[in-house]
Structures are given as structure tokens and as C-alpha cells.
Length: 114
Length: 117
Image (cartoon, rainbow over the protein chains, first blue to last red):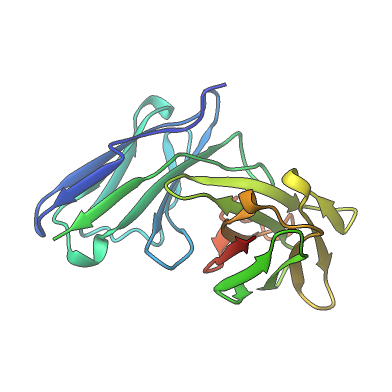
């Protein structure tokens, strides 16, 4: 069974530029998550989708971050404009459903904002 | 609100020694508890989880953890460390059945485990 796929793996941009990350979850997983992992910290949930709908985006900086999940499968996370403090690893995860289903994580996208 | 505290950001053990990684949580409802491992440049992988029932949970790679409600703890142990266990370990909590919450994981800051010969 294929795991969660993410691209790109690495990205370097200048501040105020825009960037987008892509995630393809495990087939059949209804729930998709985006996490931000800053160096030295645990992952922090940015947004959670259940099929096409958003169920939690309380920690998403909506003035600069946006995310969508097309047709309940793939998802993209965008940052526009980027700030220095956005430098982090962005992790995508998916699960079959709600608690206590296991979340399966992709390898992450490492973003460096200069 | 739930929170997780991992005592010790770095732990170093000798190969063959006991591994003990500490996790304490704060939750107003019976929680679900998880341990994840992260190897360099990889995503997180589930080691084990506690939902309900038996409080001693066995996971992959010889790890186990015990849910102690009275101590609000979920410490991770392994009797004998192997070089391949060197990684970062994250404890996480999720709202349980009674909270009505979605499967939102709240992670601790992580503990980096080093294993030396």
C-alpha cells in the first residue's frame, strides 16, 4: 500500500514570495491533516479536512495561509506572502476517520524562507 | 484544553540499556494517547497508542507504554536499546470519546534519543 506522498521535499524562497505544497493521501482515507513542525518543536495542526470539508482550521494563519482539498483526495497548502517565521517542515497526514484512527504521515516538505 | 509535556529534550543511553522516555498529559476528559517516532528526514511513524482497556500497551520494535490515570502519565519504555532506536520521539494526546472532538493530535515538544555503543 502506497503511503502519503508530498512534494516538493525541499523549498527555498525569499520572504514575501508565495509557495505551494502538494499532498496525496493514502487511498480511501477520508481525513487529511496539515501540520507545521518548527525546528525543536512538535508538529502543530494547521488544518483538518473530512472529505472535502474543513473541520478544524483554528490555528491556520488565514491572512497568509490557505488550503484546499480537491474532490476529497489531493490537497494543496499555500503561503502568500511568506514570512521568515514560516520556515518549518510541513507535514501532511491522513487517516480513515475519526478517533482513535491512526494518522499516517508523509515525509514532509522542508521550507526555508530567506 | 489538552496539553503534553515531555520531560527531557535529549536522552542518551548505552546500547543494551533501558530506555525510558517520559510523557505527562493534561486533559479534562479520558484521552487517547500516542507515541510516534521520527527518523531524520522522514515523517512520523506510530509506535503505539492507548484508547481504552488494558493500560499496558505494546507497540512495534519492542516498545511499550503504560497509561497511569492517577499520575496523568504515559511513559515509553524499551528494556534494551538498539543503535537503530536513535531518533526523535513524540508523545501526543487526542480528545477521547466523551469530548465530541475530532481526531486532533496535540504533540509534545519531542525527546531526541541517542544510543551509544
